[in-house]
Image (tube, rainbow, N blue to C red):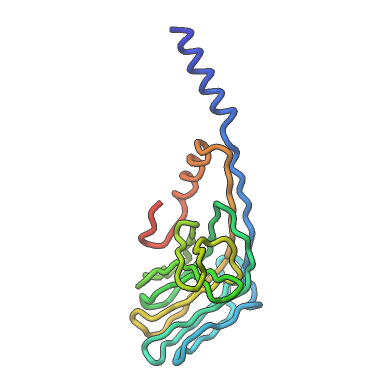
Length: 208
């Protein structure tokens, strides 16, 4: 019995010593202290305005939209050339005073013709600051001529509101970040990954 206990203890120690170290690298893409680099994307009949207001920390970007014809889309876009690793996620904070229109986050390649996105239809926007986490698995190919629809590199990121009920509203965005993570062993990485996801907010319907 003592030998059995010793053997089990030795196996446990071995697993602990050889467990992976989760390496995470977090890059701040935009703290939204100013409007530099952001440009409008919109359809006819959509009025947009971009300004800076007090944010969660420091400033935040304020994005006002008005669907004057009842339908359409309007968004903001900025260059963020990034080679994507196997495991990554984007995070940002959002709050709004807006009807439940579609909230689209798009990732666009250098040609501008191939688009990947997270399309959250009829989105119930939070009225208080909420952290949104977009993992690799949440992003799908939207359209474009690419034969390889695996997202390996992006050139631009876009936040767009498209009409579901129309109307007008205001969106605030803050603290856009990109995080990469890699682990040598799936045992510990799964444990750590699960623990920190518990405390993060996500889009309704996303399963963790």
